[in-house]
Length: 305
Ligand SMILES: NC(=O)C1=CN([C@@H]2O[C@H](COP(=O)(O)OP(=O)(O)OC[C@H]3O[C@@H](n4cnc5c(N)ncnc54)[C@H](OP(=O)(O)O)[C@@H]3O)[C@@H](O)[C@H]2O)C=CC1
Ligand SMILES: Cc1cn([C@H]2C[C@H](O)[C@@H](COP(=O)(O)OP(=O)(O)O[C@H]3O[C@@H](C)C(=O)[C@@H](O)[C@H]3O)O2)c(=O)[nH]c1=O
Ligand SMILES: [Mg+2]
Image 1 (cartoon, rainbow, N blue to C red):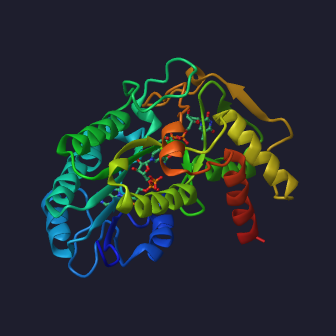
Image 2 (image 1 turned 60 degrees about the vertical axis):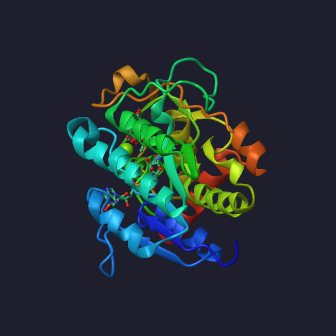
Image 3 (image 1 turned 180 degrees about the vertical axis):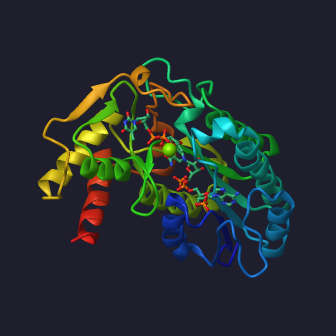
């Protein structure tokens, strides 16, 4: 094998991409691109020829794709663009990776499932997306599998990071602006940190160099479960305990059914992911979701002192 792998990272400024810049750095030299590209390299996943040319020019031994069309509601109104980025571009990455004999890492979502039942979803369960976003992400997974090269697909859920937009930050903002909040209490999943995703990715990439048979699809989420309402309550209680100025009254986070919070894209009621396959294959510990969320909050509160 010999030599450190050259890594090409797409989507470097997203929540996960930002943490990957840090976590991948010790593995080997990283060429990290956002949609604007750099030094003549195209990083725009909407430009299928551009990214193919970039990959051929860089000739990496690992491609990590952290770029995606992640606006779940907006995707309902622009399915073609969502498909181009979440599926067609991913197919190009898979083909170009295969041609180079490179590994491809990509991320997918709990939204590939229809949310039925109460059991955590396993990798072999049949996806049935409820939304355009979920469908295009599912088709991206299938595109990678159809090419059949060396790949890791990590399906995760409810991602947050200190940098970027996410539910926890939205709730903090709303708690400072409003007297009361209504939050969906009948959708269940696990908030998962972008830092955890990046660290597990780096760990897995080290391991697959020695054990290429670990190729495949894995569920990767923090341990435990909550509802969006439970998540919001956790965030607001931490903010209150830290003495943050809140407009929100005590006990003013009202649990509501999803039917009372209509959005363009339906979300799954059951977003629980069974992570046994990942933990067994890679020997990783996935901490309870509260640990990562508390770190995020600590970081955010520190920033604003
Ligand atoms: N966020 C979540 O809750 C979850 C995310 N995932 C998956 O995890 C992965 C990482 O998500 P996350 O980091 O949270 O998402 P973010 O939305 O934080 O980041 C996505 C990045 O993709 C970039 N992007 C969008 N369109 C293009 C394009 N045409 N070309 C290049 N870059 C583009 C965005 O750039 P810009 O800011 O310029 O638009 C952004 O930097 C994705 O595959 C996502 O589907 C899975 C489950 C949950
Ligand atoms: C802001 C807010 C949201 N909600 C509900 C709406 C919805 O059911 C749920 C989450 O809403 P959001 O729009 O913040 O999250 P959403 O964009 O659905 O988040 C998803 O993003 C994509 C990229 C994924 O892959 C998923 O894993 C998931 O993280 O919370 C409330 O009930 N009250 C509120 O005040
Ligand atoms: Mg969203």
